Image (cartoon, rainbow, N blue to C red; front, side, top):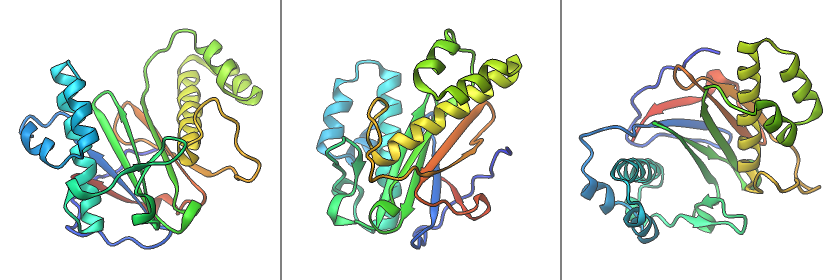
Length: 229
């Protein structure tokens, strides 16, 4: 898997049903003004920011959440603070009935934040996204046995040491992206009426692996990758 080239976005990115846009949001930009970040957030996000005691974590949260709203504003042509981000009964964030043909999913790991924007109708637009930094894990076999299928566990156990980590994180990000796609959570079974989504992996930057899940995915060559916000 090659590391993609993130490019500067247009002011109003055109998106059609079936399209997939992926954004990388900077989390360490020291030029971000916390007050300007707060100004574009909703009341719930501002309240949460006030509860974060660690300065570094609070600054990262402000950059990511303000980045999310600024990116959504490009598509919706609405002031970022006035975009009604709602929670589904499962707890998954979305745009609700206001924009039923547009869905998003956000993932943050350490100093990397990624956002997927998906267009379509109903469940066809729903998207799940996960990213992890590849690093050694303790109790890897025990985690795999609890979370993955026997087939995946056997493949991890039989792999060489470098491959073992890669296989583990491929399986983990695929699982996270899958459950985030329909919002059911890690330990809830898929409903019988819900088909398994298509899942694709890529390397957003060196040392990381990401997975995206959607009912149908375009070829990776057709993905739009933007540096935001």
